[in-house]
Length: 433
Image (cartoon, rainbow, N blue to C red; front, top):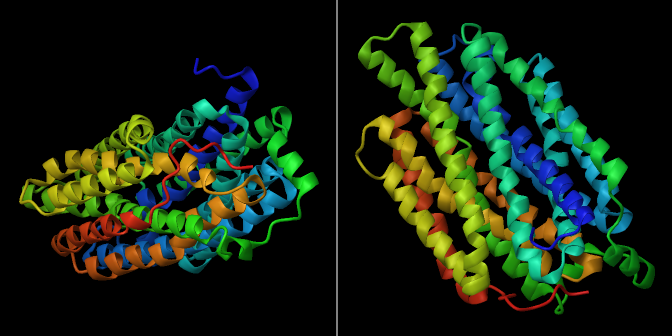
């Protein structure tokens, strides 16, 4: 299948699991926020004060996650070029698994911030090492397919988080929301199993071994030299637009849907137990629609990138993102309909990320690949962190205001369309050594 060897499939599988669990750990908080935040702040779950506090702290914690993600991605991208891809993957996976599991024992919102920061550093660092390894091990004619397949694990990770939260918070401990979120966080230990696979079966890519022996160690400032500045600018611009759009839409999905469900329950006279189950059902429906759209959108980057090129692909996905956001948040539809509109957001806003696993490694030579890809993919998160914070601060006024705020997120991919002339086209170019 795809003409890959058994070892190449092993590398892809290990990186696939590493990135999938990366996303799994990163969004667990989004699901448990409506229960976690009020509990740590001693507020009654479902009260107006709890809703306001949840939106506000979701913005802060998501912004912190993105800042830690950025720092970890840049730091461990550099480390990956220094000590190797496999060792870097082991270190980062251990960090985000232990950091997420520690959130289960957080006694206060301040400790939750600390544990989320530790997890964020590992989450950011894993991507650069995994993407660089896959790009360097795969044959030239299958690099795009392998990169897109690697990112399908994002849909796996977000879906697994959806299922775990639904089973624990929506079924097993549905009547105990004050403690169910702790068990959800504890599942963050699952990624630790991937470390064993990496340790037993993977070795450093030959490209990296040769580059390390024949060239000087990489330096971050090299990304801004005349030789690499154009590539760095292109990768950073595209990642920044995609990141701000994704996190502004997705970070508030569970919280936003929870507010819709609670408003619907109040209007129809549902009791508390029924309201809690309806909330988890709606979160599950919206998130699964988002994940399914993301999976399909990720796979569609392969034919689009191969036949049209990277620049037209970004333009197409950003244009589709504008339409999806306006459709979901800019039209007057019943709340249940908005749940299914998240499929369109997943198809475009989520789907475009399938390209970064092959596009960013194509921009840089081997000795700078993890450093460059890690910087471009993660430095933008510093700016992207502003998006969820602003949306959360404004949307804390209520669900209706949240819709009005989220519709303006469409401006971000519109800016991306204006940046197309500066995008570096890598179609038809071999992976640079």
